[in-house]
Image 1 (cartoon, rainbow, N blue to C red):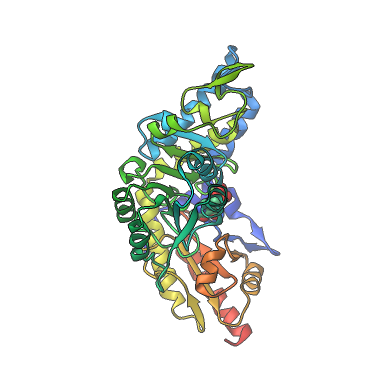
Image 2 (image 1 turned 180 degrees about the vertical axis):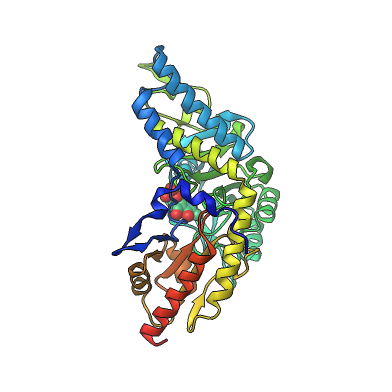
Length: 411
Ligand SMILES: Cc1ncc(COP(=O)(O)O)c(C=O)c1O
């Protein structure tokens, strides 16, 4: 198998550190957060070191440089995800804030008593809880599209919900953070739009890993996070159609989001600033722009191919681990580089702890997806998730470690 991306590892100093008394770190928790290349860290550091100042306000040269860097980061990011109108790309803290923004600003004005908000059984809590809060406030209800035994959404459920004529919003993940399942996004969007519902796509696990052209998806809202795509924490983006953003009330009030403030009331700034109240994470946005530049340089198509190859290799080898239950599609063509698994009688934390002693960083727990855990009939899983810098040798180390766990627990 080719490892064309392996030379990139040198861009990520953390990947050459050791852990647990000298074991090379094998970082397989990329669905949680990724490592950052030196270029991203340097871009953040350059801002703080050389042109630190607030943006959009002052006329002096350093402030102009900061404003220019912040806004050009927006342009680079927009290009990476196919967005032609930069006013439609709002910087937020991440996917969680993006969804809360939509639930609050769009939801309060558009969801009423008896309406239905549809989400799915494999959503991250950030695509469930904001809708539950909204539903409670508005007297609406949340319905969940089921997940079948291969970890794939049952679109029969979606059809049944849409047939009620009461669905106002369909909110789903393009890629599941636990099962890796790639949703049938085109079909979900077309079914939902035909029924007159708005559609929000959670792209947190998609944008970092495959080419995504947001406008061609046909959704109304799209959310993603910087730290899952080599960028800093605390920064991400919400894309929404301009007419929707223009019709929505601000999410937060404060500086920068206003045109004019009088005692009697205020008017709002142009897009996207209407939704960027207060001093934003300037360094984070600059770092995220650099991450988008880095990924565009590698090519998201190459990232996807690389992850597909490693996932295929890992899935092949995992089939030889005694007693291991692997969840999800188990098909590299239908999933991202995320694999969740369990041994019947071994707690996932014990699995992760043994793996940690060998330098493997994997995640154990409910992965902020307790509705999915209930569906799977477990409290937790162990999850390995790959990214562009992972290698076949690391996938092999994962499997060797799991065989050791199987031996220790005699499964
Ligand atoms: C599918 C999905 N949605 C949303 C989130 C929340 O992202 P953030 O914590 O960056 O807001 C995550 C993070 O794990 C995720 O995997």
